[in-house]
Image (cartoon, rainbow, N blue to C red; front, top):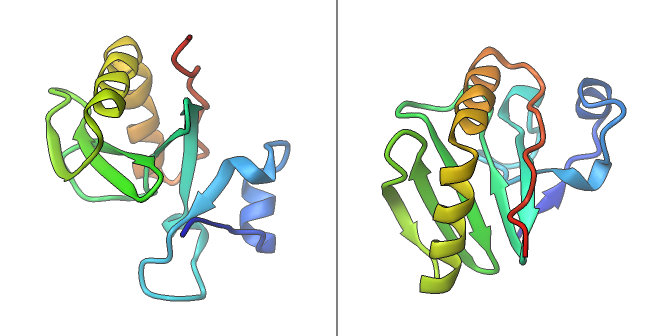
Length: 124
């Protein structure tokens, strides 16, 4: 289940952004620090796209659709782990191919612990 992190440190870090656009999954239970937050950088057709702060290599993003999650490499768009329904996966790949440079930029920002830039959704 996704949970909105409304802690003072996260609110301060993302001042001016919609609170509902910043969500996280706890990695090790409660007490999530700002650098562990996983911001939602785009949403379209019920799909949410996330990047963890200071995450491991290779550069990747998480696509969440209901109870499904897929983790994709940014450079090759290879599905690293997880699964998504076929149509959802196709939309994620189409979106990511259009925004690969923006994803790479957000990955670098996340590695430095800087606020991420939202990315336009896939148009209908």
